[in-house]
Amino acid sequence: LVHEIRGRVEAVVVGPGTVAADDPRLTARDAPPSGLPPACRVVIDSHLRAPLRRRVFTSARDVPTIVICSDAAADDRRALEDQGVVVEAVSAD
Figure (cartoon, rainbow, N blue to C red):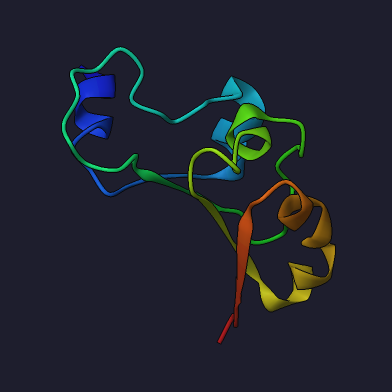
């Protein structure tokens, strides 16, 4: 059921705890084809604490992946961007 839902939505949003604990792909595996592009994966990680070697990041060249972080953490974004992740820094204000 979860994979079918992922096949019908535009984005799947998680935090760094889920990325670290579950090492998720956040894709619609084994779901019937919906005709839609794969859901964008969004990780909200203000301090960029999620481990870099997780499937959600290492497969970012195949499935759109965005990480939202704070301006303060933006200097650490390079390793994620090198894997194909789009990193968006936002102000804490």
